Length: 520
Ligand SMILES: Cc1cc2nc3c(=O)[nH]c(=O)nc-3n(C[C@H](O)[C@H](O)[C@H](O)COP(=O)(O)OP(=O)(O)OC[C@H]3O[C@@H](n4cnc5c(N)ncnc54)[C@H](O)[C@@H]3O)c2cc1C
Image (cartoon, rainbow, N blue to C red; front, side, top):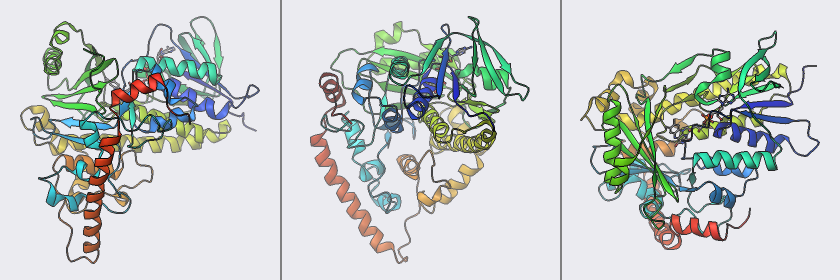
């Protein structure tokens, strides 16, 4: 009989390490006598990357699964509610904007509305025609009320959070409530078994840590998957050019300032600037292409943005932190008895905040398919690798979509982005198809796509893409048109109700801190 997998060793105490530890421990370490062990080793010298502050709605489920109270999470992580992204200047470079909200279009499972909305495009944006969420975001409203139970929603939402506080919060929950063993030490050597598997890790203080499965959450260092196993890295820089970021934390000018309920993503001459609103500060950064601008110009563009948002003094005095990255991912993520989760597995620009959700999905698959023994591990590893390679391909395509639909041609960056040589072939095919039919459920090949057809619709129609009008000769046309009109009407009605009922983001966070949400 092959040895059971009962000890999982995670190297890395950033968001990837603690989320993986928490989800595994919550499922497998049911009581004090549990034979299953999760050990997390974290370097005392190298801190977590400290960026990564926008999540998807999936984070609600991950936190709930770990037994975290949403009230505690909001209080300890300087968190706010995120309802999507507002893309500014992506189409023409002017002040225009569109939303990619988290709530799917009204009646999304019955009918796709893109083609029926088109005749009204000069009166109302696609997002506003099919969902009240854009209006809520325009007013910095919260997605729920204080009486809404923890993790339940009125409008779909994820979070903005302080990455440093989030890691610390997860650490304390995992060690105090879930029984995760935490070791602060540097891993200095990897001891291999004859099979090539990792047998144990040696630490600087002289410990040897044995395990059955090792999870590489060491960030860009990729100590196990990259440095030890040499699993190669697939660059995606031919499609996605951004390879540097400049990040700052902007203090609030007043504790009463509204807290935006979307990430702001503002297009720049050689990239885009994210602006993430937390209760006590904003996280702002410029993701740019070093082939299309230099660091000095990027720095000055970031400062100009900060001045434009009313932070001229801060813009002058701040010292942005530079982060370099290579857009891409591993050729495989699970090799032998080692699986890479987080930045060690790959990273591309955070345009749709896809990194944390990939961590959640990887940890979820690990939890649901944790191999019972070593013999089964290679089968699970193959499935894991197929699944996540597919996800990476789709992430690259979805991010690239934002660039290819732009009408900007003011800089080489935007011109290069629309050069067919830089557009994945599958995306080119899809765009051809979408000229005749809206992306919808059956359009996407897998049941668990990362980006749903709703997301594609929001970006396509937000950026002015035209899908041919529905064929009036088709038997279904009249019924569909009537259903679409009703859907637009219902959305309008619901919007009026919601705008009256929802508090602002700041009001709700204030109440959560004072009274807390209703418990789960
Ligand atoms: C500019 C930028 C913006 C981003 N924005 C977003 C966003 O908005 N949304 C989103 O979802 N994601 C975003 N991300 C990605 C997100 O930050 C990461 O996916 C997330 O923080 C997870 O990081 P990690 O845990 O993999 O690595 P890290 O946080 O880098 O953690 C690495 C850990 O490994 C440990 N370690 C390293 N070497 C050793 C060793 N030898 N021994 C022991 N321990 C070791 C370190 O101590 C550390 O604890 C962004 C990333 C960047 C670069």
